[in-house]
Image (cartoon, rainbow, N blue to C red; front, side):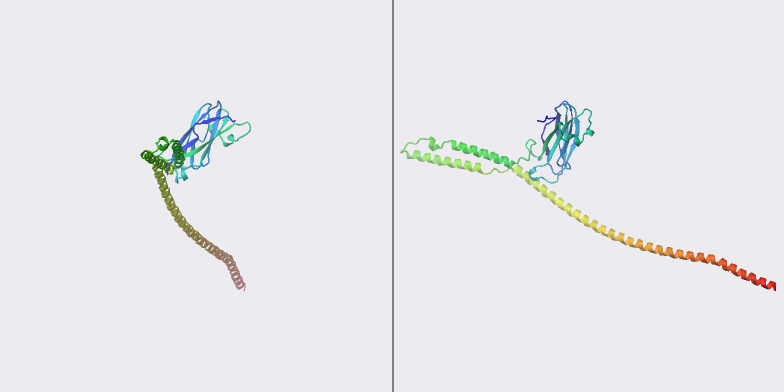
Length: 308
């Protein structure tokens, strides 16, 4: 048998169940050893519960508490029964180990290593019920058990009890006494049948429990209607966003086409500008040559005239 490292004072996490309201509870742990013990707390529904602290190191023979906060519920679970579970893992660690040093690898089960595990279950109870009587023990089942015990006890007593006819001796020939005895016997039998009939009738749940169940059903219906409205509002917003996205895509496509056409016009204008510049350059280069040629002709002509 594995040694027990931590003693957990309660194996249940009891939460006051109210719609749209958070609820908290705490659990005390005691280190039963003369060594340092590290612990880590896990749950099957981490998004629903907040554990503080969820890991740590306990000194020898010391005690500590951890608190669990349940997020505000939006829907009442069937029969107010929770399927969530918690697991407390503990193991011996060297002296000087800090809380930030605690990791999941410390609690891997290996040969020669002690890993203690404690499992806790979650129980809900409504605001108007005593905390000592958990809600997830159905009242109907309790009433049926009580009715069966009462029925068996009543039948046993009625069968063991002698009737008036058997307990009273009536002398023969006394017609009046015999008639009275028969009347008492028939009356007693009718009375016993009425008692057994009442006991055999199923015991109905208390009015308080029925009223509470009806209130929870109404709240659940209101939450469903609110959720349906929220879903419809979200659908309309999604449709509106889809239309805006479609318009944005069309605008982007139109702008892309305009950008492409502008780029093409820019390239064509750039080509025309380059052509004009080249022509101008050629014109500027050819004008001095013509001027020199004309000056040369004029000089030759003047020289010819002067020579003659």
